[in-house]
View 1 (cartoon, protein in one colour):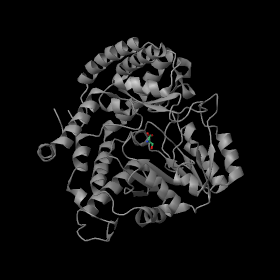
View 2 (cartoon, protein in one colour):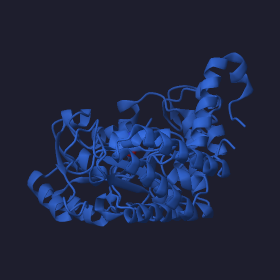
View 3 (cartoon, rainbow, N blue to C red):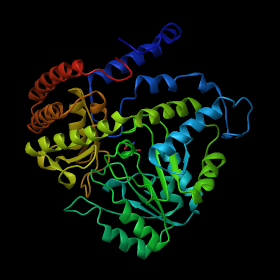
View 4 (cartoon, rainbow, N blue to C red):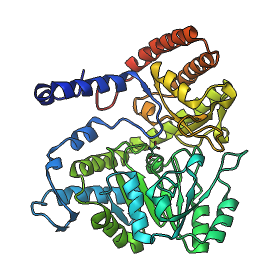
Length: 423
Ligand code: DSN
């Protein structure tokens, strides 16, 4: 079965063929990339509509183009659903993705050259939290907090000391490789003490927050940014939620500060995803993501894998492969050949380079969307162990055999779990 529509196949068979190939790849692999997911068929449908034909610079009721009778209603629906789901007073659903959303926050509340603070990228932060290669690291005086070398966790005393010393305008909490609960109240207390605006970047955990499987930053963070396509299961996009005093500045920063017309087809997909996340079953889904991550973490640890922070509280697991004698990149590449799709990742205090680091990052949101549960997670750990252990043996023939064997078993499993939006 395929979701590729007939028109596309007749107009552009070459492109249609590529999409069909990607559909097959997504169906036949175990998607363990922590920032990815599968959208529902409804989200997929809403995202591929005539809404892509419409320009609508501005906001509902204040647009620079005519013909907004329907678009205004769609954007308002998405905004209202975001506010209701997360319990915020203001939401902007126009940012094109997470990085533009974060950039809009800088534009709204800081000036170039201001001191800003975030988690260091190699510790699990995000590029846009002031890392040197990002515009945010070039245009602002960025300072960073780490995680403890032994604990793998953020030390709030270190965060407080750094904030007191540097007096940042902005403090970011959240990131891309944080396996533990983010202590929003503690960050808020520090931000208040030093007069900083606290920004919670919940891109990875938005779905867990919506489903009650991770504490909410609402009431603690002044501004909340999130992508919509990770645990939240929406299309690729982003949102900014804010306390009322920042609402106007945020809206002005997104448009006209940084962007032109919003992507209305994406806004529609976001509205559908927010509607789905508001259904009672979504809380079960969010809790199952965490239960799956715990089961996967426990089985990996039982098999001698070294997990940063010793486990997980959310959807994400960060493995340091140093003790297994293989690098993150070759491991990710061979696992992919066996049908287990993950990404290599730096680990805190990594002695290797970012393009060839020591770590592997895993997430359980996508497998949970396919209906997989703890027994499947234990199978995944077993396959990972088989591939990584064989790789460490440095015997090409043995690796090829292990890849073929595991791939066969992975195919048997993926065949039993349909892909949302495809099957
Ligand atoms: N690329 C995202 C992730 O993988 O976490 C962050 O931008």
